[in-house]
Length: 211
Image 1 (cartoon, rainbow, N blue to C red):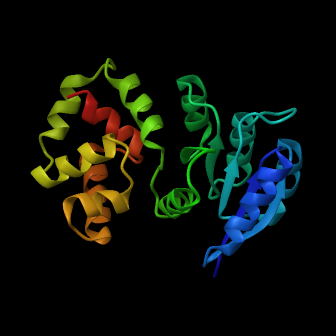
Image 2 (tube, rainbow, N blue to C red):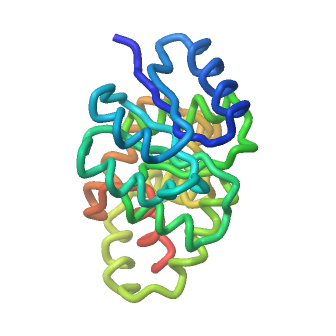
């Protein structure tokens, strides 16, 4: 079965371009696209896509609020922000609303496609620049001793993988960096999440930086 993708973007030209890019990827299918959050919220419950690419600066209801409303209606649908905004307020507002990833519109198509694959595998893709902002925001968070105790339970290789996650690398890049298979990286990350008692990349990186 193909992965069904919907797009919410008010720029007509960009929306059409993204739709064409998605349709050209093997295993992907753009099933719908909308120029406003209102249209998306009305139609997505019927379309029920696997992944939604969501802009933030939309007319009327903005993208962050759209994500919050959409996750109530379609909790299993993964939403990835695709925006020009790089400020921490928007990043955290989107993640708190239920977004699974945060990518910038200038991201090359190849990286965007890999990010969608990562979302489908349960990851939380972010560009390196965005990941760094997330990392820095957690450096002064409380709970450093607890985080240190949990991190001590990680093996040396698991700590290497987590370090690369904190640098913003995606699973494929980590595999290449450590010269291991993609499947092995996925196994390490699953173990890391279990040991740190977290469910997302952002939470894992937060604990890593509290050590």
